[in-house]
Image (cartoon, rainbow, N blue to C red; front, top):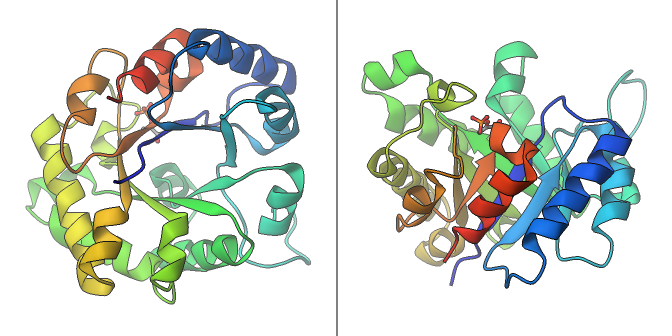
Length: 252
Ligand code: PEP
């Protein structure tokens, strides 16, 4: 059985104090529910320590939103995988479309980050997804296949147990435009087939593939009911404890 994972990408929101308040709210909302999904909170770097402290003694995991590939050195402003481990992070989001769009992230740098994160013992949430023009051009499958294949270069089948792929159509992120459940399922299945050709059917079957892009309390249940959608990467709706909890509880 595949693991369902609901992860909140807080982007550039929240101070350490606000982090504690929001996580306390999420804990209160989820209190007494039997969690059917792994829950991961990904706040900004400076909030990681507060998040780890607030999640102590709960099943909620903490993740970062990026990581550098080098172990250490002259990389002003960057954070290494070992630093993330040391603060208590267990996950890291890599290749988010906002990093690709605004910060020069390429498929090659995504691959470098993925390998460094796995080598350090972090679990990776690898984001792939097409632009609106690419969907309109009918090349969604090629785009996500290329992103997936390059990101996973040098990653072994054994290491794939530490990888989650998030299908995030760029046109659906932060826009309020959600992919239909059929569109989400279709591309998640394409990604699963790519992983099957890279590795084997078992690796692909066991892989958690999330959908991300304006998933919210109202549409989560339908998206999460699709056979190839094993969770969600949630932006805006993860900043409201009640909405985030509804999404977590939508996993059946
Ligand atoms: C995201 O940032 O990964 C995301 C899916 O954002 P939103 O839910 O706000 O579209």
